[in-house]
Image (cartoon, rainbow, N blue to C red):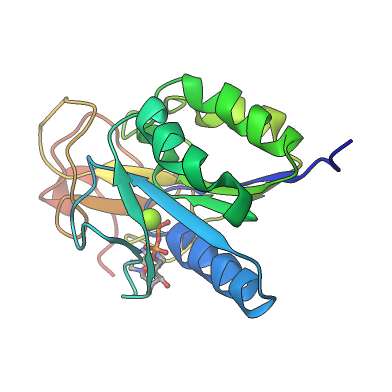
Length: 198
Ligand code: ADP
Ligand code: MG
């Protein structure tokens, strides 16, 4: 019988260092001579098509896939050559990612996933809450609140769009603590918040 693997979830708001932490773990696995395959959804093409990237400009090679089925089709032919599977921006995958993670862990693989726990409206994001529930280990990171410098658990969208997915980073989103998070206001102007200037 194959020894079961391990499911690791790295979560938190935007700018909390999820991609950095994923890249760090994958690089360490490679130092340990483990064979790594990394994936990301094709919704996030901000920086590279063939790599995941952090806001601090660290990168790791990755394959872009459209769906869980696409990821599986890409991975299956080389399953015997892969020990560790990394997935970034996992919140954008469909619910089938759960069954795939379970299937992979029973085949002895280590699966390290990073993704947003909540949307800009502070609601649980896609499959992430369920992945947190089935993981062996959950790492919940915080960012720095751009208003006061406290630990930030929220992703503040700047501007009026109510669409769930508006891909981007600086200028479109900001990390905020509970006190300074305003899900449904246009936050281009901090005066609206009646906050002390910093
Ligand atoms: P995530 O994948 O969670 O969005 P990244 O790993 O891409 O985060 O980026 C983390 C890096 O972003 C930090 O190391 C820091 O250099 C930078 N950064 C920019 N804004 C913030 C912020 N508000 N809080 C923390 N880090 C920030
Ligand atoms: Mg990231």
